[in-house]
Length: 120
View 1 (tube, helix red, strand yellow):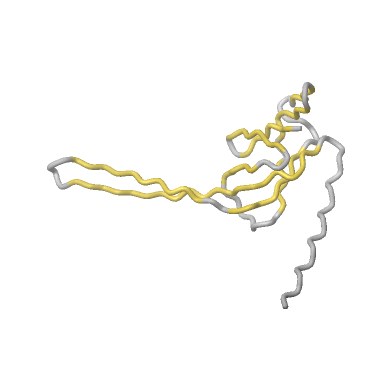
View 2 (cartoon, rainbow, N blue to C red):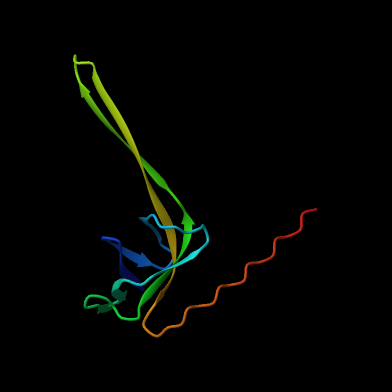
């Protein structure tokens, strides 16, 4: 099963277990996010297309990390002693899709994390 979701002004194809890089939002690593703007739900040959959204459908994801992309812009005019260098760091949020829920499906309970083994 897969879903086409909208986040900001971009669209992403989400599958269970897939990693998506979204625009930055305030969150912590390990926190669950609910993405509710589902445009299409696909399951093999069947597809449910929203008009414009699929009502009740949502995608659950877990925050993995916060990658950053550094871009550099340089201007240079030869023989004129003119050099300009600017940098910009764009923050993102990388999430792992855990569940794709149709309308009316309940949110699955979180699995309890195992206790750490004692060190000897």
